[in-house]
Amino acid sequence: MRGTIFAALGVLLLCAITLSLAIGPTGISLQALPRAISASLGWVDDPAAARDRLVLIDLRLPRTLLAGFVGAALAVSGAMMQGMFRNPLADPGLIGVSSGAALAAVATIAFSHGVAANFIQPLGIYALPIAAFTGGLITTLTLVAISSRRGHLAIGTLLLAGIALGALAGAITGFISYSSDDRELRDLTLWMMGSLSGASWPKVGAILPFAVVLAIFVPRLMRELNGFLLGEVEAMHLGVDTEKTKKLAVVMTAAGVGAAVAVAGVIGFVGLVVPHVMRLIGGPDHRIVLPGSALLGAVLVIFADIVARMAVSPAEMPVGIVLAAIGAPVFLHLVLRRGMGGWE
Amino acid sequence: MPALADDAQPKAAQDANPRILSLGGDVTEILYDLGQADKVVAVDSTSQFPAQALKDKKNVGYLRALSAEGVLSINPNVIVASEQAGPPEVVKALKSTNIRYVEIDDNPSADGVPAKVRSIGDVVGARDAAEALATKIQTEFDALASDRKTLGKHKRVLFVLSVQNGRAVVGGGGTSADAILQLAGADNAAAKISGFKPVSDEQLAEFAPDALVIMRRGEASRHGAEQARSLAGLSGTPASKEENLIEMDGLYLLGFGPRAPAAARDLMQKLYPQMANATQSSKP
Image 1 (tube, rainbow over the protein chains, first blue to last red):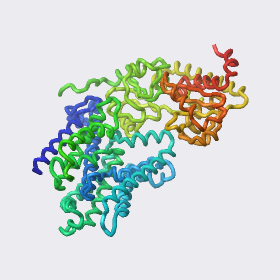
Image 2 (cartoon, rainbow over the protein chains, first blue to last red):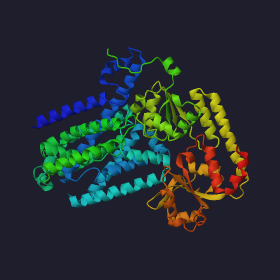
Image 3 (tube, rainbow over the protein chains, first blue to last red):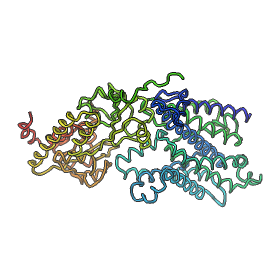
Image 4 (cartoon, rainbow over the protein chains, first blue to last red):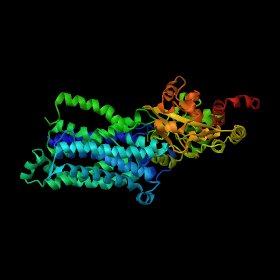
């Protein structure tokens, strides 16, 4: 069962990556890849090959990698949140983690030429991921601190506190955009819609540490989160170190959401929906849900990004809009036909 | 190897056959005025004047949300871009290609427009036409400046970009709206706030403008004027008492292209009706 699911998702991911590299408004297909590579190694001197190289290697490849990372990170963060809080609505977007990360990123964009220039500019390309990660982390930690009663996380309090924190972060974000000039404002607005159009190799480099950390630590949470399925107290009786698990899940969520927000802006929907789809496919076992969500999330965002860049070519649509417009009806259909995704 | 490149021309041939991508409403307007329309292959969505630009040419989307590959797909060999073009990563990627990328300074002032025209003329090799156009614009701005001196007391004017949820978004200091108001011989009633900002009714009352300038979106829309008229904060102001409400096209008024002196003059004549007769003689 697990093998079949992962094999199918793996094939799907390979298809998505191949299509993402092969499809684009310039009409340069993967066939041009050998020539592009030889041009970049300096074997041939051909202006057309240089353009192929630019499109395939400097534009589409980093873009595909970022789309994949963003999808995987958001989906796995959603799966961790839902598992830890045993609540199908827990999602980095709903409980304010995305808003916190977005607030930190917006502040970084708005202040990078002003008061905080001396702190922000030396960090260069890493400023945004670090800020977004810190913002997400602070939000999640505050959330856990507020919702903990004698060491126990109260789910109702958590969701309400999350909504409140999200609103607060949104308010401060709103204040910052209110005080920025109309030019910065338009940048911020577009950024809040989510887009991968600014993908570049330095950005891939900036999120690489986050990807590595997630890949190392998220698998360690699979058994523990399965324990949480029974309830936190029951998990503790099963020998799960619940406090450590919660902390690890919180930090990993902040890392995933923060890095995703930093490179692609605010993309909703993936974190909430992909884990549900995975539970519909493979059941509630986190050994399937976590890695499966990562794969499916990557596939989804890569496909959405292909649509985003082709739908109104040569212009481009924000990928967040594509995801919600295509994904929401599909998700609704799945839920209506097959139930709540393992939460009933 | 299969034939892959649709467009692999030698560089010399490309230069003889310019394919210009124009980014920015003002840039497109200047290129059309310089007679370069047939060399423009694509424009951005802010290039609304002349209207045929968006009809005839490909549209690469909104100026600040460009797609690197989308731009490459129209295969330009010169990109003439407003400095507002973005996002920065896409502009950086485009600059790294062998396509010539020229950034045009965006300085909304009487000096900025002729400078814009001259630098675009340099790019497309239309120096004489550009010099003539720049001189014409300069002369018009100079005439405007001398007319401004005859105005006497300047009116306090409020620029309303839009009305959202009953609140007016006004043009404060440092905006293109502020610049055009000054050129038209008006004092910006909202000069003390900076940027385009939504303001309260109370604030509107305090601005106490003598006249209101409202941005029109599309020829048929009278909606903005009605909304502005209904703003409670304006009810006691001189602008409302005298029904002094001026509607003008957004790009015409704020674009700071070749029509900027004409736009400023139009506005001036609407603000100071006595000017309309006085300056009639100086116009051909």
